[in-house]
Image 1 (cartoon, rainbow, N blue to C red):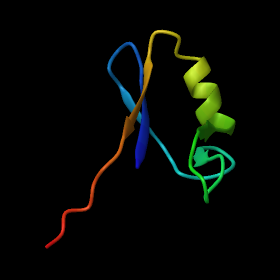
Image 2: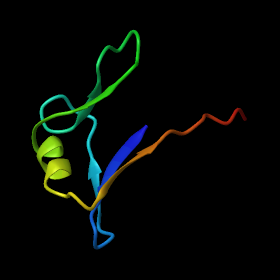
Image 3: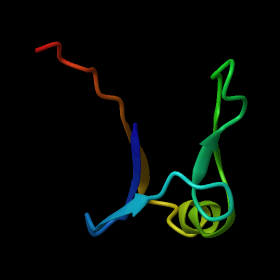
Length: 62
């Protein structure tokens, strides 16, 4: 899964999957929420006309 913030000028900033300054799931055993922390959280609240994009991929069997 990938998360990114897109600001009003259509600049995309990837959000890393890390506990301190990125994103993580609320419970790795029962995934119900994505939690933003640190600089990732600050960046989303600082971009009131932006958006957070979540991309969920599927594995393709070969």
